[in-house]
Amino acid sequence: MDRSRRDFIRQCAVGGMAVAVGHSLPVSGQETAERPLLFFDGFTCIGPKRNKHPAERWSLKHLVDEMEHCSISGALVGYTLSVNYDPMYSNLELCELLKPYPYLFPVWNLLPADTEEFPAPEALGALMKQHDVRAVTLHPSTNNWDWEAAGATDLLSWLTENRVLTVVRVEEFGGLGGIKALLNRYRSLPVLLTGVVWSAQRMLLPMLATYDNLHISFDNFQINEGLETLCQDGYVDRLVFASNAPTMSMGAHRAYVDYAAVPREDREKIAGGNLTRLLHGKRPPEWRENKSEDSLMRAVRHGRPVPVPVVDMHMHILHEGLHGAGWHYRMHNGGPKGVFALVKRLGYAGGGIMSWNGVVSVDSAGGNVTATQALDVAPPGYWGLANFDPSHYSQEELAVMIPEVYKDKRFIGMKPYPFYGIPYHDPAYDVWWKYGNEHGLYGLLHSTRSDLQEVETLAPKYPNVRWVIAHAGGSFAMADRAIAAMRKYPNIYAEITLTPVHLGIIEYLMEGAGEDRILYGSDLPMRDPRQQLGWAVFTRLPVETKTKLLGGNAWHVIKPSMDRLPTYNIPEHYRDGRNRPRNQGAV
Image (cartoon, rainbow, N blue to C red):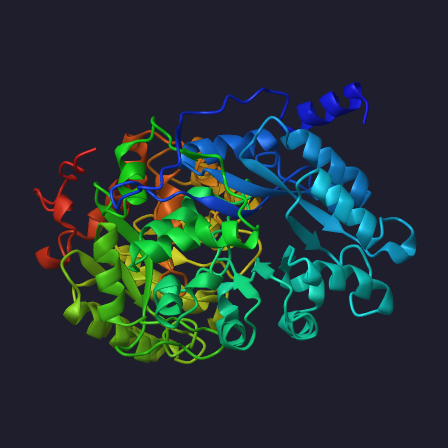
């Protein structure tokens, strides 16, 4: 490749800026429990994307900055152009891009040789050895080739024979059934499966028992207490830290490991040891640490509670002893004992509890009982959100049910759900919204529509209700809509939670809507709360702003309900006079 072309590629990929390598320390064979873990990321990906939002992260500069910020010591790096342009040409470009960074290692996208676009296995092997490439990825769906055809056998057999780590996504093989077929046919091929969503647990977890060559990551597989249960079941050697940065937040995913209640040895394997083994000894040359991190980031990296109060505005609960909730939802230890024990370790001071059966299972009356039972055993600082479904109950029935539930002063929130099948600005909900407006309640709205017309209709009509947009961090397009709504109406707020944990989107929301309007939420135990918490803690926001996000801004939403809320159910740092938050905690 000529020098001008190489320099141009590098300039584009790093966003036109040189990146300084931050402070690093040599790896020591005498690491102690006091030293943070060495993280080696099993899959990141840089390069231009189709239909990219202008604020979405994509470049090598973004990746390097995120690694430095989150104290990540090394990473495997894929390249979008290796999939979207000629694979081998772009694979070689990637190697050139990564040369200045000894802690970044290329992942090559491969094709079978039978279409005459790609080297045959012997020549491929020579090129991989020349460039020290130890991991590959396959995109049979996107690149439109049949991995089961005879023409692909030579390639996959060669990868298997040489035990080359092969990083794949489930959609490229037509679902988990296709992944099973791949694992069955090539029983010695080390496979790292990324991008699987948490809702696939019942299908994916049994596969670990069947296929010794299957390894999984937790970028989207954010299952509640996942590392604890899988280590207990003997699968620690198959668990790999992989973040999908810079699209996703590295801090989100490292928090899942940092807070794992498993032995130090197991956390070391998950953070990077397993990946080094799969790469035949390849590892980052140095242990990297961000010496400029704040006290919140430092606490997470050491597995300690966040040193400021955390108030979770989006918490579900199961009946005690349950590990699942029908449909495709498995939530290990999702009852009160499991949930409250976990969040105590993270530094929670309280939050809003709603049922699962009342929303997703559309048993609204039963859901209110579930939430009541959870509040009966909750530690201090937690309050309730009630559910009412106008598709199952008449207006006359709702007029009786609503005040009856809110006689319990611990309930200050209103939580409808899309599965009720009625838009929230439909008159069928008016009986509930009028009651909430009269009694200063707040509403948490998971929109039934692709726009935010519901909340923008309700906000001026019921000005005494604080309307909280759920999942506003789910996409940059959603963030744009939420920002526009909050700019129009002062009683609209937004909480962040969703699986994608987009890098930079929390900062984007706060820049667009102001730092007092964005709220922390986790959606536990559907997703484990640790990724959501790490996502917030590892933002580039000042500590004072993070403190608002994590617990301070919830005050604006629950303040009008303070007179009705029992003292026990008010987060402790809000109790001073019930009119202002007390000191948010040492920072």
